Length: 285
Length: 260
Image (cartoon, rainbow over the protein chains, first blue to last red):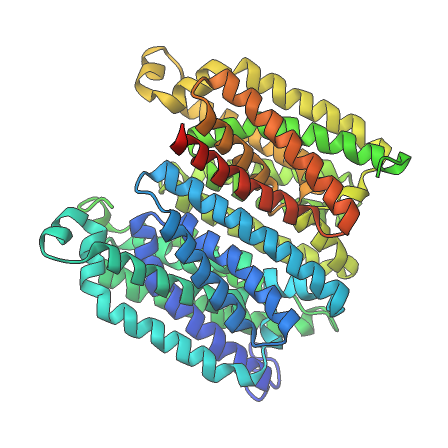
């Protein structure tokens, strides 16, 4: 045990905070991610995360909790995409790309101000690639509230969302407001993306959003089962990633390896090693 | 603004704009926005790896962009295209975080690579840049018809004996090379903005493919020139201006298409 868990792992407060924040991010992202993958919204999910970096970098400027920044910008971007939205896939991707470009431009500007006005040179790396062990313990209550809020909305819209993923026309015939469900889906997606951006960084949060669900859907096409499996993969990769990053301080003394690297690598390994399930041939997704 | 050390920047910016305008036309026609965003980001760790190993930055970028192409086209055989793109993107970026953490004095360099740096172009960098740009444009012109046909009418292309999956790999390869050229100047995050914004505006202004491509180059050139000038005057990152103008181009193009 002492080889695996370097001394002080469980006593360290920053580790506990990282586990709580990372764990909630992994669970919410994995659950909503199954729908994102099923609906073919991986690009939109990635774009929301990237745009949220503008909020993250603005929060350094304003001195507020980064989660609020990430969240605010993600929700704004989701609104812009919905507002400019289009049903044709190519046009939708183009709109996503344009919103993404505008958001990243803002991000560039805010980070520039971070460096010139606030003298926080590490902001670019922290926002883009995450700095989990630097999350203050005071961020935990807000994180948990956001995560629980996301899960609650997801629980409420689970059945109609599933139906409108699988068969939008049937959903409409049953009297489901497909547009409202789509909006709520985007809202939960924004929450998940903001949480993941806090954890592994804005441009890597796609790993938690798409990786575990893609791995789970490889094994089973049944959404309920895939969601449980995806949450398990996401949680395990995050926890193990934190553990390895903590241990890495002892492999190369004085210089730890980044948490995000371990989490992303573990998620990708989970995807590559996951066997293709038998029920995949029955229900092609 | 036009002093001798800025001349290199102007030349490099113009080269990048011509390449981005040309390839951007195909990015928009083929609906390859995500790939155009993912490849530059996947290439970005290449610069960190190059700095670590002490080799040429352009080579590092090109190698990683090609790795991105290989990852996307391999995974896309068994997976949705966008999931494949997302997965190979995060895998390479994950490596990037590792390389970045190994080169500890890199914080400012990271920022420049993500968001662009117009002032960092030396005279020695121009010849390889020009050659790569020429290769990109030549390849695009040679493959103009088959690339266009596979994007607009896959059935017609198939009956004409064009291998669609080969064209896809060729397109991604050209995109990767264009990426490696443009990245140091505009930054990994906003390369695609330069590809998508002008080209989408051009496409909504005209239906004729060659005209649209030429128009796309013109708008891209204007975007880059204005962005470099404003960046020089304000000292703000060039990526911010490129991103903003990309959006203005798209919205303007949509408005023009609606009134026409």
